[in-house]
Length: 125
Image (cartoon, rainbow, N blue to C red):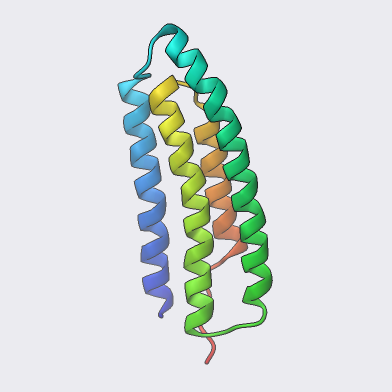
């Protein structure tokens, strides 16, 4: 897979999360009062588990990257980015439902970290 294709995939992943986050921010919280408080209490625990799980899985994928090359490395790179994207989308969903911004910001931070951990480089055959 060429580096141009990987760069397009990476920007597609990032733009989807950012646009959904922007829409969630503009629409505002979809729950009121006690529903919002109860949902946020549950979702922050879920977010913490998902974020830590994704970070752990990214570290495992990064170790596997040193053992492979070519198409397999490209696939692992995309998988690492998808893990980062998952945290970004979950943060945006929390923002949409409760109006709390910090999970979205942390999710985007983890997504950007996945871009650093899995850089686009020329494939070696």
